[in-house]
Length: 195
Image 1 (cartoon, helix red, strand yellow):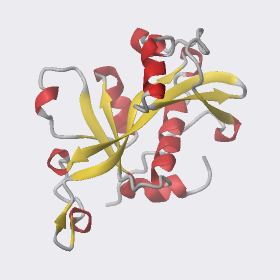
Image 2: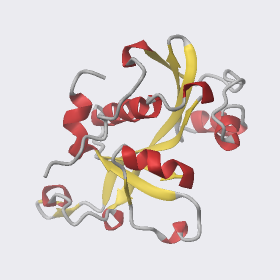
Image 3: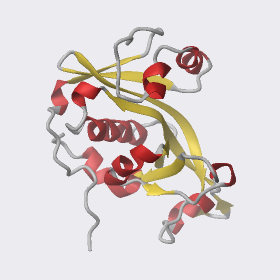
């Protein structure tokens, strides 16, 4: 039985009306609010500038029809094979000749937030699709999208096809859960036109 397409959920926005720009300076989105003080505050903190300056992550703004609708931060990372729960993980990925791949190359979503005026319209799914396309077109190979999801965000990521990684030692007792999306499994949907 084929898996459902995580990008087939209804979206009430036109992906063609989005434009994107990189973060340039703290305070350029003072009025942004998504309802989560941590995500709102990040844009006006020293942390966002430090991420950019130290090459720890890149933040991008998503504008819908000229209005700031969302933002996301991405960086490179990896997920060790033992944290991927699937027993059906392709052996061709695990071994090449005598080399064993211990860590799967990944693009990490550090933050993803949608402005309260735009929530519930599918913008989060549009951004996941965009980030997936960035990962698939990356010069260094990227196989997974990963995120350390807050409890409130877990249902959203599950709808987008993310699965839980096995809990690692430093996660026990924390509210964040590592989740991953295997980009090979959704590559056809990402590369198909229409969204």
